[in-house]
Image (tube, rainbow, N blue to C red):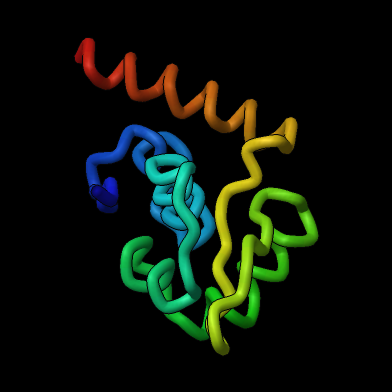
Length: 103
């Protein structure tokens, strides 16, 4: 089951409600899954044009996401859990979530 985007996400509260943060937040919640650009756009609440023209390439170049596979014309992407920066983001996400649960 997908962990949906929430305005009350501690990650979004702390880092801001931007397309980049919403995308990272969604992927951190669903790090074991792969998504098409359409799915990422819908679930992370990011415009498809912004996502496909800017964020995907930026995050691919930074190593934050990886292209998992292609099915027909659809490319599937997932969080690169082997990347050091993603590992640190995951740690920060867990700390913020625990802190939020205490409040």
